[in-house]
Structures are given as structure tokens and as C-alpha cells.
Length: 329
Image (cartoon, rainbow, N blue to C red; front, side, top):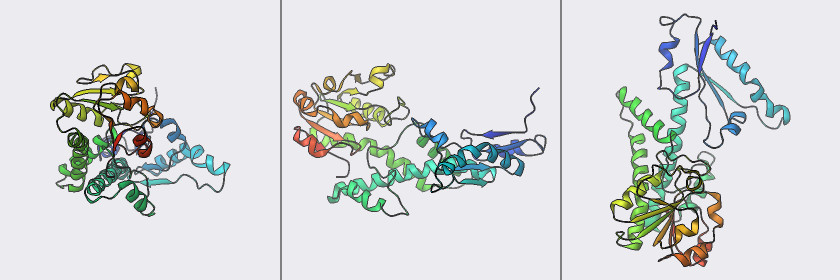
């Protein structure tokens, strides 16, 4: 028989979910609950496990907090022992509900930051400014920072959409109208369709045209298609009568493309470009920077490329014969 002293929450749970379990009236008072949210990036989980930027522990039990601190001691002290100029990993101790809130608030803030720079990019498009230069300028402010200030076609995946929506619904459950969170979602939804509008502006009528998507996954170095911007773009382009092709380094080779509808998944970039009227950079895979764009341009009906991540070298693309269109530049 195994007797547990308590339980540690690692995965996200609704804020306040651990409180009833932790209450002495529900279970034995010696049973402790600790909220220990993980901050692992998809594709970098192992590295992030051993190199956290902070450790959050939430509980009403001093005993439970002490046990969790002991558990994390090797990780907290490892880098400091190797190099005393590197500060130890900060350990943040909170109450249970606050720790549960930290994970949701972190992802909601990052999503908001992306939606903010996308909003700025759309203004830049209208006034003739370059959002990449604007992002550099504001990112040097130590209060803001440069991370998550890359304008593009919006965020997706499993975490940001779910966490922003969960925090929004939690606010609604408690009678609060979280207008900023709702605006973050609205801006992101609109951002995905702005790429289709750019295609309409340059190609005029999309019906009968062929559009190629460079990338399908919501981010590079993963095969995750959950809430990927490419899915909304494919649906919208199909509705407007366009033929859609796509190439993705993982999706094309792994067979994950099964279940995708309204798109022809090609096996290499040149097959993708062949017969296209425009290309759209959807996912910023590193290898997309070094494709033979000259050859690809020669295979297209019209060498137009929309860089949905402001990721490619504009000068290189124009020298290859492309009409280059970025986001907010």
C-alpha cells in the first residue's frame, strides 16, 4: 500500500481547482496539494526542464513547499555551482490559486504581446513604417524586451488559444468582462485573414488561382497542427475558389497530412512552386531561408511571395525575381 503525503499539479488546471482537494474538510488535513506549473516550450521541453527561468510553487503547506524545494535543489543550484556569476534559478512561493493563475497569465501576456505588435504592424502598413524597425526600437526598452515582438500571421498551437480562452472564461464566471483578453483573441483571428486580403490585393481575383503555403505547422520544429494559422488560411482560400498547395518539412514527410482537407501537400519546395500564382511563408522553418528561390520563381505563373513571418531576406527574394510583401513593412 502506498500512502501519499500530497500531490503536485504540473499540468494546467482551472484556477482554484486545487483548493477543494487541499481543504481539510474534504480530505485528511495531512494531505497537501502543491501547484507547480510547468513552463515548457513545445520542441524544447527537455532543455527547459533542466534550464528553467523560474520555479513556481503554490501551497498553504510549509511542509509541502519544503519538500518541493528539496526536489528542485539540484536544478536550482547546478548552474550556480558551475559558474557563480550566473544567479540561481528563482523559486517563487505563492498560495495555491496564485500559482495556478501564473501559468495562464504568462501565456495570456505573451499572446497579448504578439497581438499588440501585429496591431502595430497593421498601422505601419498604412503609414509607411517598417514594423521590424519599430519592434527593434521598442524592444530595447528594458521594461518591454524584444521577445514575442515578431509581427506576422498570428499565434496558434495548443497553449495560447486554450489558455487565453480559459482565463477569459474564468473572468466571466466571476462576473468580470476581460476586454483586453477578448481583444487579443479578436486581433489574432483577424490577423490570419489579413494575409488572404494581401493576396486579393496583388492577385485581384483568387478564384482559379493557385496559392502555395510554405509551412503548415503553427511553429517550426514540431508537427503540431492544433489551431495552426494555415488551417484558417486554407479554409478561406478554398471558399474564395483558390487551389491551395503546401509544403512542410515534417508534415510532408511524416504523413501527418492525413486529415488535412482542401490542400495538396507536396513533397518538396519546387513541386510546391510549380504553377503557383503566389507563395505564402506560413511557418518560419530555418531551412526556408536557404531554398533555391530563383528556381522556384521560374516555375511560378507569377513570382509573388507574402512573408507571413517577416522571416525571409527581402533583398534576396527580389533578386530572385519575386515581388516581396511582408507584414507591416
